[in-house]
Image (cartoon, rainbow, N blue to C red; front, side, top):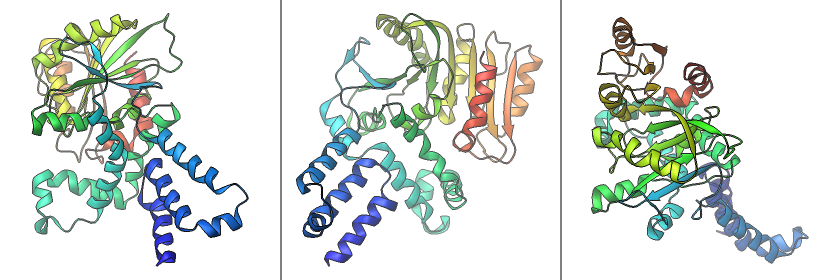
Length: 357
């Protein structure tokens, strides 16, 4: 039994778990149940090994006191910064987003056919099928790289999605934004800022790792109150009435303002193009549809795939906008699905860095 448990713990650490906190915890249990063997084979004192690993676990869990390039900032109703709610943080520490993503990807990969599984109907069969295909074709590993990128930046801010779920199902009223500083941030410099609007299932930590690839931009991820990712006029108006004033109060110096919407977050891009196009330098649609065709002072940028029902009509929308005299740019791959941003991170951010200048 001891041998079997040891093998299971090693497999958990090496294959099953994605986060270092759970990998290291598996190793701690492995060392505890093999205490005699460890003492015989390793010269380092046993207690030093155990407490060293426990210390590393505390370093690996999501930050409570925010540090690093990316930070998750909770705000009160007046737009002032407040401490992260402790119970939300504890849930976050026990169930970190990366581990939930890891579990979701692996569970999705082994789901039975659509006709036999109610999960498809509840979550959206198209997205489940595409996620399954990604996993078995080796594309799913791209979902882990943004988290690794955050860790290399000294950031593990946690996820706001848990608080959004509590808002939706428990009636709480949490509000937060992510702020990712530019590489080699200099408080004496002025920077353009990108406001990013997430899609369905909340404001993920994942996106912060993705969008930190933009050169010399401050990234601010704004959130819907719930998990829907459907933004309205008031949500976008807060960019100018709450979020920019907050950034300035914290000493950030801002030049041009950009907006991006991904998936359901394309609703933010549509609101911005319809009602705020004179206030943004660029408005970007990512894996979503453009429902507004008009002349715009803002440049409109589009990213989508031909196998993605959400964005497959972006080329025709781009032609319509150009006919209205709107400056546009498009990155479109007819063979890509809804997770294009993860699959082609390098190419897409090279495209964005060029087109947003």
